[in-house]
Amino acid sequence: MSNKRRPGEIRDAILEVLAAKPDGTTLTDIQHSVVERLGSASASSVRSYLRLNTPTLFERSQRGHYQLRERMVETSPPEAHAAPQEVFRHGRATLVQSDCFDWLRGRERNSVHAVVTDPPYGVFEYTAEQQLKLRNGKGGVWRIPPSFDGAKRAPLPRFTVLTERDLRTLADFFHHWARLLMPALVPGANVLIATNPLLSYIVSGAVARAGLERRGEIVRLVMTMRGGDRPKAAHTEFSEVSVMPRSMWEPWLVFRRPVEGRVQDNLRRWHTGGFRRPTRDRPFGDVIQSSPTSKRERSLAPHPSLKPQAFLRQVVRAVLPLGEGVILDPFAGAGSTLSAAIALGYESIGLEKDPVYYRTACAAIPRLASLRVAATEATDGRSSSL
Image (cartoon, rainbow, N blue to C red; front, side):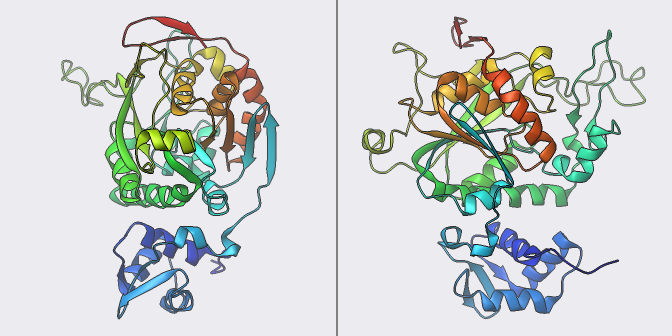
């Protein structure tokens, strides 16, 4: 087995470890955590990188104890920046084939006015190995439901199979991501993150530790295929038992970069700090009635986590309180957020590192953006066309 590593692999592992430990940790703990992530790594390589990059990236508060410098995100080493492979543009949307971590390291400060994204909930389900299994119909961590009445249902990731190590990786992933995102956001920028009831607490805690301000949740009322099943291989014996509740809602975490001064001051300077109201008489609500993504939309944009335009256009419209600014989707998938932004006349940027989904999004974005959909607010049942 080759011991050759890709350039920067140990560096990235060290940064991920310390990004999850704001108060720093010992050299021994860093070495063990790096080995846990990479499978193997020499102690001398970890030590050398820490010493060579102190005080540029790291601070040594005491002997053998390191932490990230407070301004590390703004001074990432030039070699960490990766040029995008491809760029697709349609209307006011720009889709970049790039890893969001690399892109955010090089992004101009105060240049993103809102984020609406449906990230990899468990990280693990979007690894190359698991995606290959999904595309080959093997499943892996994905549960591929059987056909029902001739209808083929969308696959769902089984988050109950995640290990403690997977959950720690998830927390590290979102903490590191949020730290990189912070400098790119303008003060008062809204950040909406789709998640699920099993993992939302981990994602929320990791993002809050990075400095974003938690502002509640949006409840997407939707019936999914997750939960409600009887015990496996004992469904007759325990016919009146559901192992876990049937999922009837989806949480979207709401965060905000702290405003400068009062909200009114922030709105005047940055045009951010609140939510755009559906009408002058109605506030934007945190409960939105939704349907599962239609077969028509899935045929236009085949992606296992595709969200419907009827829902997305409501939240995308709301995140820019004055209807001005740039919306970012750092996990663009099939481009549904960008499509919603185009339909509303907003400027948007999407990032997608998977080449298959990138090509899917290039074809899907113009088609999804041109759809006419009806949105219904759960608060009063009134419908409007988007």
